[in-house]
Length: 321
Image 1 (cartoon, rainbow, N blue to C red):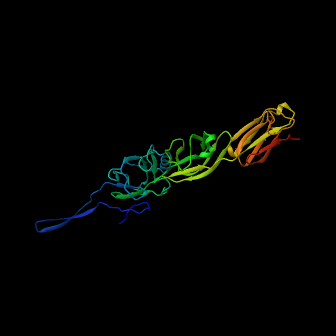
Image 2 (cartoon, helix red, strand yellow):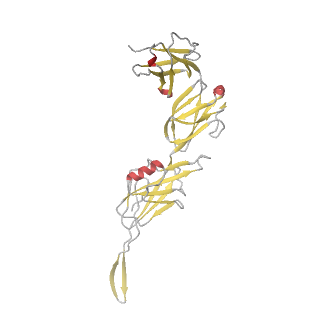
Image 3 (spheres, rainbow, N blue to C red):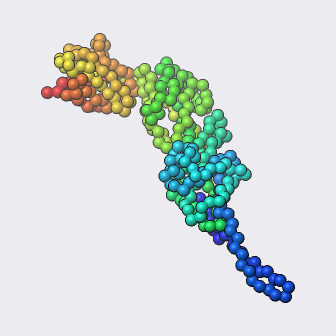
């Protein structure tokens, strides 16, 4: 006796029986073989152990198709698919001695109000396949987990004058912060940026005209995460060059960690922070790696600029000999 669950055990009922038929005073033995339907009965539960009604259960006989659909969140390549009723889904008339992979797709609209969270069995026994015997009924218990979570960005009141703040996640612009708060807001508060994203580590950048924030945060499925932008303390970062050859302009200045690019369009003989034509940008205090490349590409300079609060950091881009 076996039972299938998310650990890979299973219960099988095979339909063959022996019938004894007695006629008058003579008793003879007659054997009848009754073929039962080959089935998989799938029960879907969530991370709280509760049964799920209304999920879509999909059956695959090829692992590559299972992997494709579990990543895209749709049973487009399924051999069979059906919704759960009363927590269960039954697949009948299956081909015996075949490996079947089972995927579950569900949209949870109650876990985080106003958001539809993708829930499935991604990365849960994905290598496990059910092999059904002829005439067997195989009971499978499948656990599903939320695959997405929310992240909310908000600014504190001291940065009110810097609004709006542009928010980028994994190099994708997701919105602007347009209001500041003295206390932690909710994910649906006005003026915050809230974004639904796949679970895992994300990189974010937030910027205003004169300040920038960047970092990483780990997103867990089904949860809301808050990123508070600490009040910005900024300084000025400036670049200039006295390279004489006009063919070397514009000189491109890139700040890789911020994914920002600027240009020096003409030479200067000297520079202070108030010199007209000086390339200037305000940044949060901290160290920034920069790369300067002339138009010809023959000269490249790489360095680190240390921006300090209320100070002007001026960097001269020297020519290449």
